[in-house]
Structure formats: structure tokens, C-alpha cells
Image (cartoon, rainbow, N blue to C red; front, side):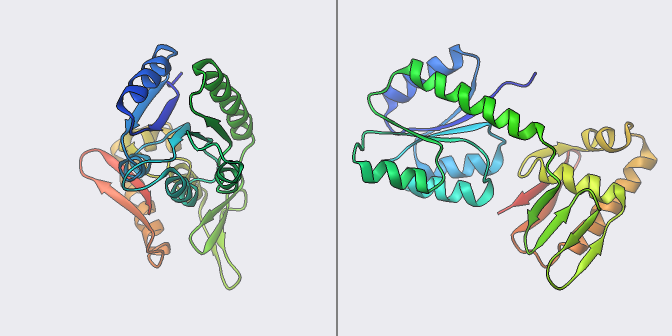
Length: 228
């Protein structure tokens, strides 16, 4: 089973060291960033299971960071950690899409408990097969293999639909070529690889007008479905 990946942003070096150390002792894989801007860059490059965000940070505060994260991912759990104790700050954080708000100084035991609660909830939600995805101006119906909006409907083959769903379930994550082939065909031989290239070319053509979306070719490695 893959380790749970946590994005943790905190500019207080001492608190960050202690919190990160406690999380890692509980077998979590932690990416720590000292400011909101580097935290957002890390989020775009990685696939995180939960985000723990300080609010008062340089370059981009936690509220701004949460707003940007929610533009890319509406489901990942977000917990704010902050010395800001005003009710208005707590309400603002929750309205931005955070799942919880812990006031500093906080108990590491309480943080660990909240992480486990949100992870259980996330796993339960993920167990329900998602059939409709938002992708730019389109909606993607995985059961009927179609991309559609108010003015057009684009049919996909089953392989194209399976490939697009795989990319959407792994946004901004590098997928190795053999990983894609094995997932879609159960094999990674040469001829399947040629078919994959054809399907990717067609998806690129269909999504060509979506400026925030790209299918990157990482030479000798695989592909990354990037959502800016």
C-alpha cells in the first residue's frame, strides 16, 4: 500500500521540524514548504492525500494557497493550522473550502486524529466510482464515453475514454509509459505502445482549445496530464 502523502506548509522552522518529525514517525510521507508559493508549486507537481496549511506565510498566505488548490482539486482534504483565533478567520478558512481549522498551539495527537478521520472519509468517497468529470469547457461521461457541453457532443472510443479517465485520476502526476499500457491493455509491448501514441494524439486534438490543459510527453519516461 502506498504511503499517505501530506503537503505541509509552515514558515516557523522549529514548529515545522517537530510537526514533520511526528507525522513521519506515524508513517506519513511529508513534503514541507516554507511559504505558500513553493507550497503551490509542490502541489501542482505531486499527488497529495491531504494538505496541512499555515495561514500567515510569506509570498502567498494560507488562504490564497487554499483558494489555488481548490481550483485544481475540489476533494483533497485541507486543514488550517494558525495562531489566528478570531471566529471570522475560522469562518473564512472553512468558506474557502478547508475541512478543519486548528488553532496554535495545537496537540499533535488531535492533528493525527483529524488526519485519520479525513483520510477515512476521502477513501470512502473515492470508493464510489466517479462517472462525470469536469474538464475545461466539457463534461466527461465515463460510462457513455463522451465529452459534451451545451453546444457539442464528442464520442470517444472505450480506449480513449479509459485513457482520459486515467489521466484525470492522476492530474499533474507523471505516469510511466509502461504503467499506462499495463493499466489499459494489461501488457506493454511495442504494438500497444503505438496504439497509445495514436490515442494521445487524438486526445490532444480534441482538447487543443483548452489552454489550461496539456498532455506532456516526458521523453523516455511517459506522460503527464497537466492542469494549470
